Image 1: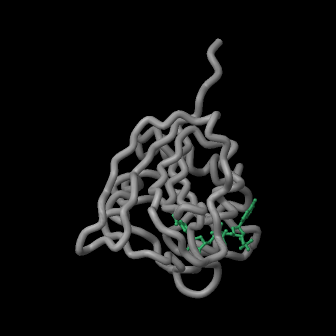
Image 2: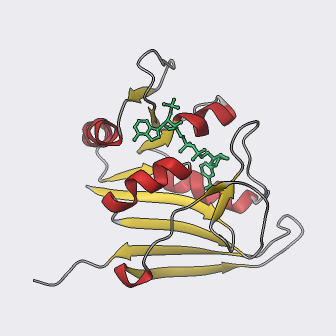
Image 3: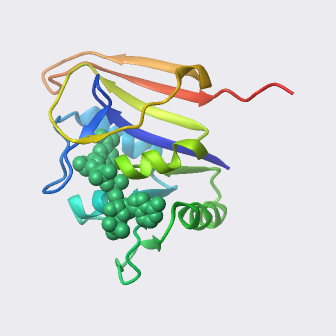
Length: 174
Ligand SMILES: NC(=O)c1ccc[n+]([C@@H]2O[C@H](COP(=O)([O-])OP(=O)(O)OC[C@H]3O[C@@H](n4cnc5c(N)ncnc54)[C@H](OP(=O)(O)O)[C@@H]3O)[C@@H](O)[C@H]2O)c1
């Protein structure tokens, strides 16, 4: 089962602002579509703060919310109290759905906790620098191979250029 992190990051690995409204400092409709295309039909793990930022479950995927709060419940979502429990729930759900990929959709704490277990990173790398306080974790590029890079230029709907990059973890040869 592949575990994949999916994030949009700026030049400094910034992913957003904690607290308040869903704090994406950019508006990139084609990235939203890319996110949808890669998460629909799959189990998706997210942190309680990312859920709280929108208070909305995205349709056609199973959302697993990670929290330490034993009383936290959201109708229509699965709740996990550790990242390992989230992975177990996601694995069972993936088998039920007949898919072989678990998506981890943030935010910063959950990306940090699950990076060591990740096999693939879907990173939308935005050509800009923004203000905020939530970050994608630093990762050692030597442990990852870039398998895809597609450039998306600025246009009337996108004020910033960005690349869709996919990295796979380098598996040590036997
Ligand atoms: N650019 C992007 O691609 C992207 C994607 C997603 C989110 N974001 C941004 O990321 C920001 C939120 O990130 P964040 O780092 O503040 O929060 P987060 O990772 O979404 O959620 C943090 C919460 O997850 C729970 N948690 C974390 N580690 C846990 C563990 N080991 N076991 C059990 N529960 C655990 C805790 O919930 P409790 O406090 O309830 O215990 C914690 O407060 C927002 O600004 C959002 O807009 C950006």
